[in-house]
Length: 133
Image (cartoon, rainbow, N blue to C red; front, side, top):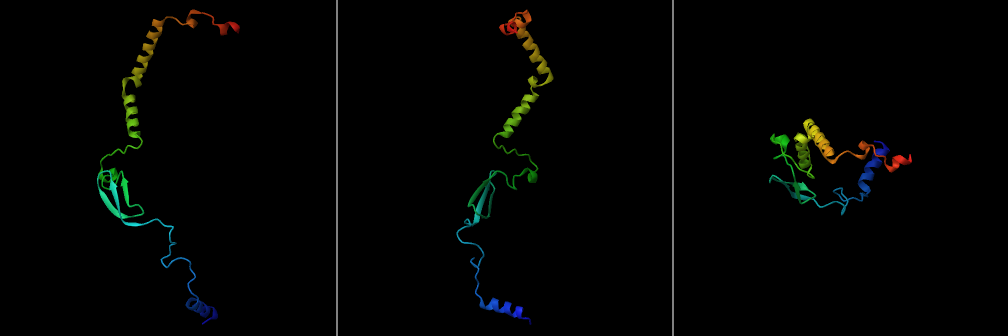
């Protein structure tokens, strides 16, 4: 046996453990409390029990109601984005957003302009800004 091997064995047996950590390896008073029986409640009503640092959690989608697992479409409306999208989709399908609607709007504007009468530019009236140039 070599001297370094003997020294290592003596050091292990004689020198006390100088590790400042407790025997389980975690510093005290810096970790959150762990709940072994934490409950997770889904919006569909399913309740799961697991371990967590939070005692109770509420989730919108779980494995019981997720569209990937169920095959059904479920819209999760966050900040009313789905409503806004559906409203925009309805506007696109309405007559006013289509090509026919644009031509109808333009013809209605032409009728309104004709009812008002000719504008100053159409009559050839010189405005003060044009006269100063």
